[in-house]
Length: 410
Image (cartoon, rainbow, N blue to C red; front, side, top):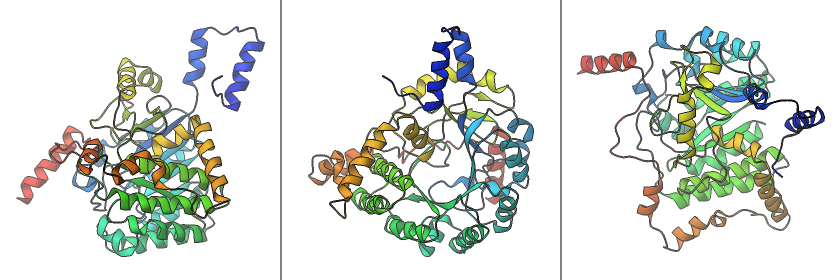
């Protein structure tokens, strides 16, 4: 029998008890009204100089960015992530949050934490909001990767102020790569001591970045640091951290270029919207996949359009095997029994061992260690394209500004 969430079970039971009176069109309308998981990219402008995305090289034009009227057209959501670029560059971000709270149960803003006063100001008005500050390692490593002078200190001080204000949903976000993997557990322990969330991602590529040349070179070293983090998470008394351990187990699987642990349902119950109002399944595709533009259509027209269904067909055939929180978290909730079994197994192991998890539970790690697969073969499984054309997701007008600016500099 397929798994049915508790709320959905009540709905199904009600249909049965009423003599199955609803026809297929009515069932479809019910599905249309279900809450979605949404990520809103409010700008491509950024004050950081991060080496892994280089988004600052291709900013959006402020006058082209989505406004409040487009935000109002979004569907009901159970979770919304506001991101960029750097979202706090937008001076009307508070107005955007205010509108989104009419539509969403929970909102988290991803930021580099540099604009402390603006972040504190929005937190005062919306104390229930979540803030995730991207910190890519300890001070020297973070500042080198993010290209922001005093970036670590500014982000850390912002986090401290938010905690002092009594905010509960606050934490770090770290994109792990060769240059910062050794800082992974250190940062986790800092966040744990401060009572904060700790989110992780692996170095990856997409059209959303200005370049597609990101690749992890020393996979065993990076995986070993993830292994250490997973064991720290499994030691905790927090069920949430146990499931984060499973997510990080999936990141090891991802950096070795293997199939996802769980199916990807992006574009079915989850979406991204860029600064121009283009709605996409995610930000991990090689090319920009557009389901429709919310500035030109209503949400129902867009979500049920032929273009949206064509994108969904391509998503079902997607071979990029992304494992980012935006796609993995909804899947972990939808297919909850799989991570639950993994968690139970490893918590039982934790009763007998201080190291209940090993990266070599992933067969591919053993194959690489034992020489059955080469580094070159694993590199071929990655999304790195060293000779790729730049796919930056810019509008034509924003790209014209970029080209004009480059010409003027030369």
